Amino acid sequence: MRALTWHGKHNVQVDTVPDPQIVNPRDAIIKITATAICGSDLHLYDSMIPGMSNGDILGHEFMGVVEEVGPANTTLKRGDRVVVPFVIACGKCFFCDHKMPAACDNSNPAEKADASEIAYGYSMPGAFGYSHLTGGYAGGQAEYARVPYSDYGPIKIPDGIEDERVLFLSDIFPTGWMAAENCQIQPGDTVAIWGCGPVGLFAIKSAILQGAGRVIAIDHHPRRLELAKQNGAEVLNYHEVKVREALMEMTAGIGPDSCIDAVGMEAHGFSPDNIVDAIKQETKILGTDRPHVLRETIMAVRKGGTVSVPGVYGGFADKWPIGAFMEKGLTLKTGQTHVQNYLPDLLQLILDGKIDTTDLISHRLPLEQAADGYKNFKENQNEWTKVVLLPH
Amino acid sequence: MINRPREELYAYWRDFSNLPTFMENVKAVVDLGAGRTEWTIAGPGGADVQLTSEITEDIPGEKIAWTSSDGSDVDHEGWIEFKDNAFGRGTETRIFISYDPPAGAVGKVVAKVLQREPRVQARRELRRFKQLMETGEISTSKAPDAAPRGDRHF
Image (cartoon, rainbow over all chains, first blue to last red; front, side):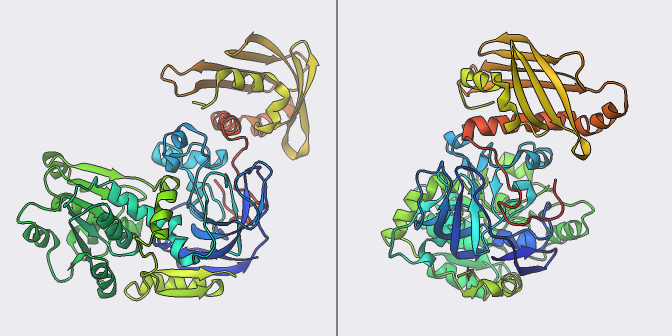
């Protein structure tokens, strides 16, 4: 089959590789009909996340048609249309039992689990098309993918609904939704969201659906700010205003009730702290993330407010404003998305027409043009807001 | 912590012929009766080593301990213990596994393979056992199931 493979920093290409096979009883093989390039794929493209190997198949946001199922899978059958969550979870361990599939104990193979246990103090769950820290599973930017524990994660899609309307159930829609849910929004709350990329846009849509009175979105790309505005947000361009001052002004000196960092480890901008972080990150000498936005959310949120972090971080943050965090009595909520928990309700929102999931798609490309898609998604973020790849 | 009843875990382990399903180096285990089993262990360069194991302690549902008999290629002992978690979170499971090669060339080579990282090895065996008991299968991302992987692996 054809698949997009990783070959180092800023080097991905479509190769011919062997087809995946059923190996475990609960596996399924999915013929992929649509797959997306995610912002967190750019962390791999930029070599910011460790543990990639030459030839790894990328892609964790995908959907398709069931081609074949293992003998222990009683929920799926050939021909079913499914969206596959990016988190691989067994559905049987303590954490899956307690509605925390993104903390699954079992989905990271034993020989890989040690690495993340050393790095993070616990073994990460498996994920498709990502670092070997998350299991080294082949991803979905390919013609076919093997889906482990396929009787637990994937959700069936009714016929007659286009791929594009449901594809983002795989990652960015539940990620944006959980980011908003972590804010514990009370009716009428003001929510400020840093980053109007795909997750930020879904966080805007979700915060409004969850009862926010006001959403303020922060970015510097005009096209992304326009999308945020179309989705009901007031917008701030951080190249034009000082963000914290503007937020204080807009909230009569109180600050937003909650703040969402939908940016993560590769924050842009030329503030002094971010420049220092960028140098350290690029030189790998001190290897810290670039938590500029995280610092800014803590400084901006109102006293007693909540900071929610769906943005991906990989290593260590310094200059953490612990004084402000403690003195203001803040709550910080974060974590990889517990995708499986959200799928039935979010699918229903789509079927009921309560949310448009397609307005952020800027480009639809055949799989063969995936490398071009990565390059532009990275370098032209204003125009390339979301790329969908079509392998068949 | 394994999210299954301790009797079930005990029963699976007590049938030593199940061990090769989750122990990487153990190729086969044959029941010789009376608590004795014969193990075939994958050695370096395709050379297998044999050991005969006998159960030294057997508390149903709680603990199994075993040790290799005289004449085995390697000295080996181990035990596994199962305890109900006081807060209902499943079965607390602890394992001890030791391989101690006798003098001689074969022994030294075996030692290199088996004792390279014994703590890592034991942790992985236990993790695979947990995966199998909780999910019915052992997680893998290896080729050819998942298409070719990169050259470098952890």
